[in-house]
Each structure stands twice: as C-alpha cells, then as structure tokens.
Image (tube, rainbow, N blue to C red; front, top):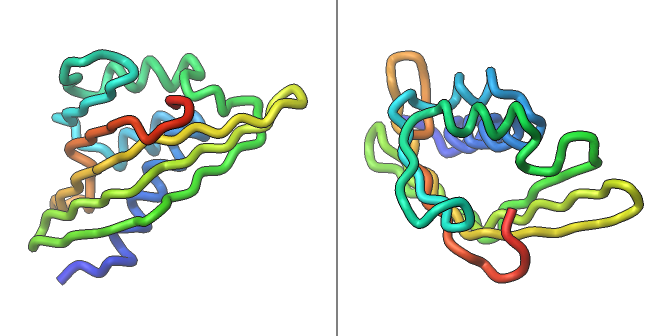
Length: 133
C-alpha cells in the first residue's frame, strides 16, 4: 500500500523541477501521456511532455535567476490503490531585481504508480485569484 509520504515526495520533486528549470527531473516524474488544462495558456487540453519541456527550457515560470519558493495551501491527497489525486492551492513567490511577486493557482494533479514509480499523468489548474503563474 502506498504511503502519503511517498506520493508527496514525488509530487514535491515534480514541482521543484518545474520551478528550478530541471526538465530531466520533470520528465522522470511525469508520464509521457500527460494531459493537462492550464487556463492561463489556452482553454484547450494540452497533451504530452514536449510543450512543457520547451516552456521550462525557456524560463516560462519566471523563477530562473530569481530566489523562489512555493507553498501548497490546504493540501489534500486521495489515494485509490495505485492512483492518487493531490489537490491544493499553489502559491509561488519570486524575488528578482528587487521585486517580490506572488502568484497563485488551484491545482489538481493525478499520479499513478507504474513499475518505475509514481508519475503525474494529469494536471488541472483553475484561477485562485491574484496573478497567474
């Protein structure tokens, strides 16, 4: 039976990779058939890893070259066998060039346990007020 700690650890590796600009760790924690909805990018579903790899390699998050941190507000984990749903409000804080910026978004990330470990297979984001990531 999977432990919450094991799943949260993979999710934190995944999120850290996004904001640290580490596409290799992102790919290692994400299934190749990823699907996601990011309301601030497009109102349509985006499939696969190439889109995000490109975004990460071109500093889309604004965290590269900045001091940054993320916090998960009201985190909840639902585990159903080899499937887990993590939901929370993600707050990302960056400090760059003397300016502090906070952004927030509501997220759900679905993880599935494969033979090589837990992987994110689906992401859904919705506005949480404030500024989008």
